[in-house]
Length: 151
Image 1 (cartoon, rainbow, N blue to C red):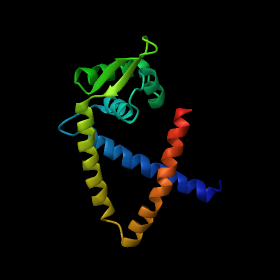
Image 2: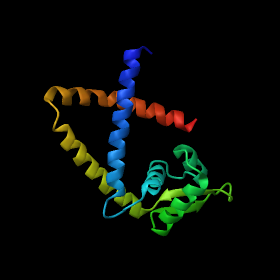
Image 3: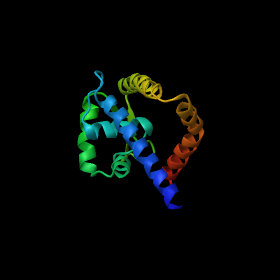
């Protein structure tokens, strides 16, 4: 990768992370949910990966399992995460988003769509076209990263 390409990828990374941070902050601050930082990160992983384990969440977030456990206890008490024993290995507990959490996420996704639409409306027609033309490539990157994460 040449220096110009590397710099552009770095800019893309920062932009995606910043947008993601803003959107997840909006999720954490909704009237229906109101979550702290780690709890917001944990519920995001549970929603994105139903059936995930505590250890998998800790590894994905780069957090200590004990901290993730504390966040999960709060999320479970609030009715946002459901714990289910694994059928094949009863020692393993799988985590699923509750109906309440999924409803909240659907509400937040609709809000995110509005936020992004407002931001896109500030672009020129040419910028909007370039952004929309990039969606298939971004989806392909998303698929690759999801596949790499499952390895």
